[in-house]
Image (tube, rainbow, N blue to C red; front, side, top):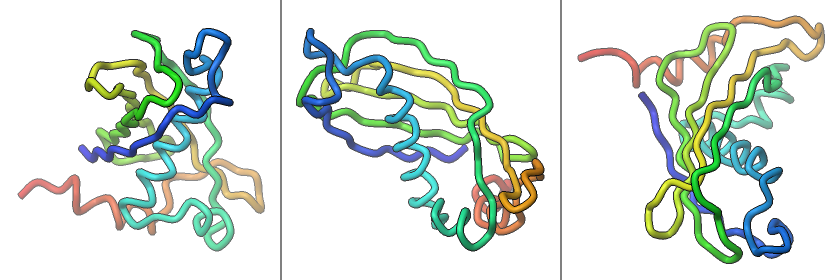
Length: 138
């Protein structure tokens, strides 16, 4: 299991009239978490797209809202990978407020697509090689 925490402050433009993080923005926070999770483990999403020709479209997204996130609050976006990817990769997402209370949680599932052909593929070897050491048992 691999977990990475990324801090993100709620900006004014991301809130609704009540000063709550607008519900539609949580998917963007999930994306921030995934991209920074990849970067933390030495994987550049931009390089994966431009050099390797691999894109990762979202195939499902599930989330639950526990309590509101507020304007100017510093949140912690926690992204966890519990299993090595195959044709799909599923990230567990949790967003905590400044009091370390759960605000939102869910999962996002993505597939791997070879961009030039548009065909779905298995997780690329370069990605698996970076992740396997974390999943091997001692």
